[in-house]
Length: 404
Image 1: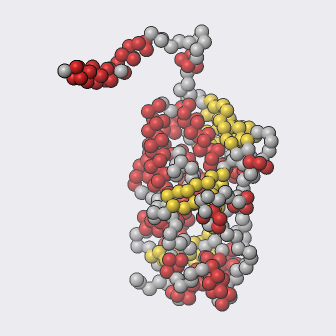
Image 2: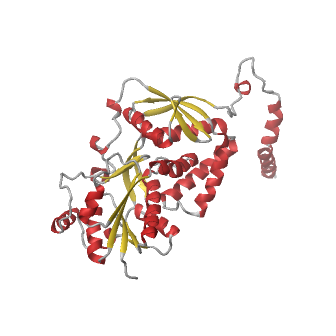
Image 3: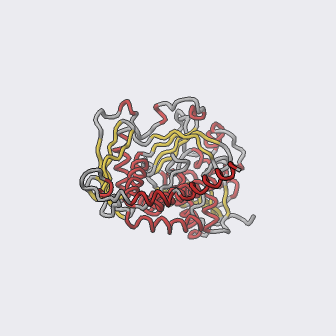
């Protein structure tokens, strides 16, 4: 391995990345530059620069990427209908690609030989960071201290921090591991590692329990333009702001709680709790609008594409040629996915109660059973004859053989 003089570290300011910063500097005798992205974590990042420099960073990057995250990562996944294993809207996964892209960008700008992250050796995020980085810069060196250092527990990390005068806040430790961005929160560890135990109330951060949610339903109306949510209750919003608003409304009505035993890429099952009010609402509304505006064959085939798309995202392959090619199909399908969807939110449920579109394929005079009906029922006789022809042929031949 060539001499490493500069390292760009993905930095959150928590215990792990604070210790990693000092450990990398000590081990490699290198200059450490930190990179932090605001993806809608819901907490202030004002003190991070001072903290990083007090821990030994020579330079600090903090960037607000909420708009880019919403438009270039969340929106394509929403249009594709990407929900992993039918439940997880891929919030953490989508965020990792954007962070990794900017780690590489800053490394190239600063002429750093390496980037570093704080992911463990048995999670999915290490894959998302590293595969993305190598896809963008095959020569970049990637360091993953949690996979190689001598510290084997949180207690050892705390002792290391105290020994090296690393500024950390020692407080009662939450048993959970959490990641949050605009599109949702992932929660694991603690009692959640027992799939037979119901999640405790403190596992949830932004959603009210159904029991404590309002006793009256909340109605909202979302407008889409070519698959992109553009208005909420008749008011224009930038996408990031619309997502933030829906997180508040949905969370208040207990919408967006997901309890999932999922299949990780590396071959183990893990139990995760997710909170994603906006993602649940928007995915549901978007698909219901597609039911109205897409023809049957396209709608059914798109469900196959959605599953494959979600697997590519979950498995860290955002920059794969296949994912990029699938976007071409998705974009074509969204040309007429425009209209309004009205939803009813009530104690954890999210129901579509009305929908309309200038491109609606619903023809009332064909669907009705009233005197306005224009469907030619006599035409169905010939259709039945042709549609059932293969099965009648099979039956005739087999019965003929049975008589012999």
